[in-house]
Length: 178
Image (cartoon, rainbow, N blue to C red; front, side, top):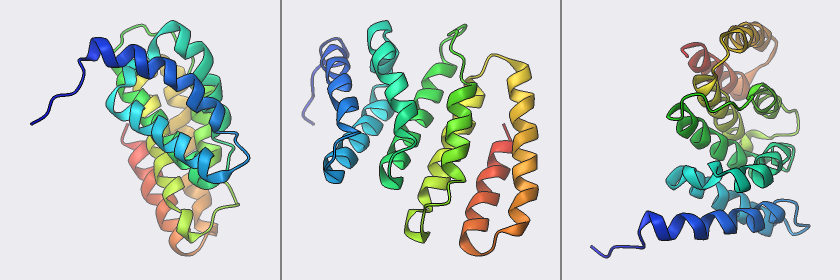
């Protein structure tokens, strides 16, 4: 097996690349934006610590929040990045981040009306991201608030039909198991 660079070498390189990739999320060429979002999601999955350095966090976390409003395939990858970051944040006691606004953005992303059946994975990745961030949440009042939101949203899915309903219900039920 061929070995790659050590964490000590790769983390600074990836941390500096994250800012440049973040700027590409808003690129006018959709393929560039999608590739940047997919790469950011993969970095968050493999090396989430790159996002959590002070300098990088100041630049990229607001960009990732805005990326949830992008086209469905872009925002789906951004939601995957948030899911990985939530897992990493759970391992950092007293991280001090207020996650409510990001969780709310992930929920809006899951319930957005501009997605077609081929983009229903956005529901899954957004709710997974919300669940992951709630698990990393240090504020019990926020956790309670979102459990109530999940229950309310679950009740509202009765008015939705087809596959979209199934995706929403299964994702919300998973979130309630937090």
